[in-house]
Length: 44
Length: 382
Image (cartoon, rainbow over all chains, first blue to last red; front, top):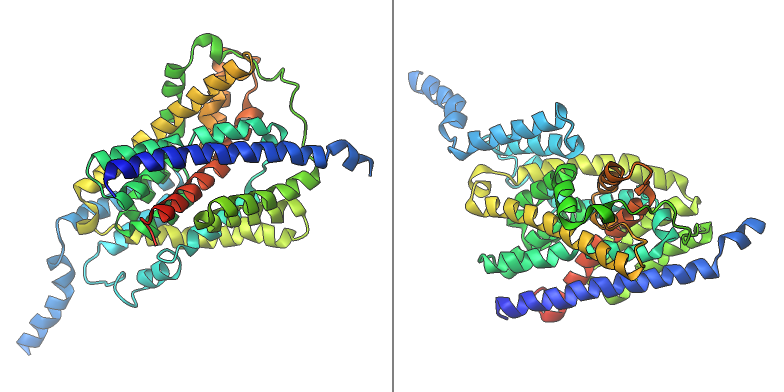
C-alpha cells in the first residue's frame, strides 16, 4: 500500500473512528446517568 | 610476567579504549536528564531512571544490554512484550477520577479532538520519508500519553523506543510552556472570558454509573478496536477497582507499589535503549521535532473543536477547555484554569477542564486502539 493511501485511510478512518467512538461513549454515559440516577441511589 | 601485567592493565583500560564518540555524548545527556529530574523536578520518576539507564548502556564492554545482561533481562521482561506500560495503565486507572467527565459527557468529544495531532503527524512523518510503522510510532507521541507511546513503539518500532519515550515525556512536562501561546493564538479575548462556572446543565454521576462506566468502555472499546483492548482494559480495570471500593487493597497496590516498581523498571529499560550509536542519528532529532508538532497540533485541534462546541451551544463553552483534551493529566487542566483566570478572574474552568482532560486520557487510548485495529484491517500489522 502506498504511503498516500495509508496516511489518508488512517486520517479518515482513525480520526473519524475516534470521534464517533467517543461520541457514542458520551451518549452511553448520558444513558447510564438516566438508568442509574444519583437521586434514586441516595434515597435507597 | 611483564606481558601478564600489560595484559592486566589492558583489561583496565579496555573500557576507555572502546569508547565511541557517541558514548560520552549520551552519558552527558543521561547526566542532563538526572539534573532535570533531581534539581529541576521535571518528571523525576521517569527522567532519573531513564538518565541512569542511558549512562549505564553507554559504558563500553559492560554488556548490560547483551544476552543475560541485567538491563536486557528487565527489557525482555516487560518492555519487548509491552507488559510494563500495561501495568502502569492499571495504576493510572486507579488514580483517575472520571467524575467530572461523567458529569458532562459532551466534553468527551474534546478528548477525541485532542487526538487529531496523532493522525496529522503520521501524515507528516510519511511525507518526510519515514516508513509506515515508524510514522505510526512517531504519531502516537501526540497521544501525550507515555505508556501508550511506549506500548505502540515497543511493539511496532522498537528501534525508536528511546526517542519516542523521551519525546513523549519531555513534551508532556512542557505542556505549561507549549500550550498557552497556542491557546491565545486560537481564541479571541471574548471567547477566553466565557464564564463556564454558571453552567447548570451538568449533573453528578451516581456511584453505580461510576462503576458501570469502566465496564461499558471496555466492552464497547474492545468490540470496535480489539487490537487496543490491552490498553483500554488495563486503565479501566484500575478505575473499576478504585470506584467499586471492593478491592481497595488492590487499587492502592496498583497506584502505589506496582506503579512505582514498574516505573523504575520501565525507565531504566528505556534509558538502556539509548546507546550512542543507535540514538545519535538524524532520525532521533526528527522524532523529537515531530513529537513537538504532534502536541502543538493536538492543542490547536482541541481548541478549534472547543470553538465549534461553543458555537453549537450558543456560546456556553469556553474554547480554552479544548486544550485539556489531551492525556497530560492533570497538567493540561491546570494550564486551562490558569489561562482562563488571566482573562476573567471570576472564571473557574478547572472542573470542566479536568473533564476534558480525563476524556483525553480515554481518548488517547481509544485513538491508539482504533489506529491499531485499522492497521490490522489494512494488513499493515499481523
